[in-house]
Image (cartoon, rainbow, N blue to C red; front, side, top):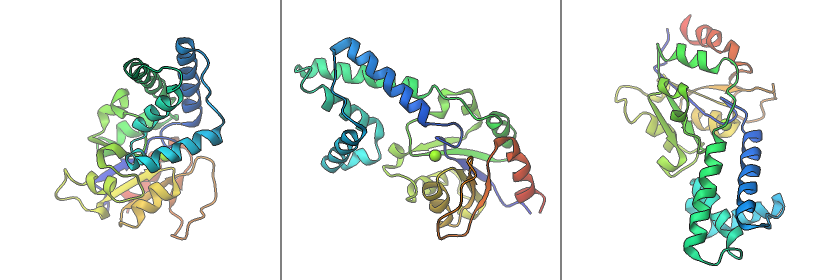
Length: 236
Ligand SMILES: [Mg+2]
């Protein structure tokens, strides 16, 4: 018997490949910014990570508000270039707008749209993301009943708030009647599993399972997804 009533999804690296999108968005934003203000010392990836770390220590909110974190990084990079606070703030906001726009320039994996469309006829669907993509900016957004980001719950998966908020609108649905699907072993699979939520691991690269909890059910291609749901949850 199928007891699943609500299915939630991660976004980045589950619906689309995120790394090339972020790199391109970052490069194009930097290019725009340098056209505007001249050369900016971006530093190495290591420098960027240490700035991130320092900023998060100063303001722990940045741990889960990655949009604000990005703005803080631009502020930091521009502090010696634009001395006027108002002028700098304007450029920071414009840079962020360019970045976030390009950050949505994603290519969905083949089969995602049709799978979600079909699934939405039978289940309540939601998004649980640690990132700052907005599913409602895409046509596929119309199939989702809700979307929860880290800013909404002031926390990151694998902690409980994303998962518990998912049930807020459904008095009669429990964790056991929920299925969470994502690519990240810890944030998605472990986080959901320890709460008693059913899990599916999107394992696109056919990697090994290496956490101490039991290996979850998994799939590597969205084209096989509906069949898997049917076999695992609907034909029993
Ligand atoms: Mg992910």
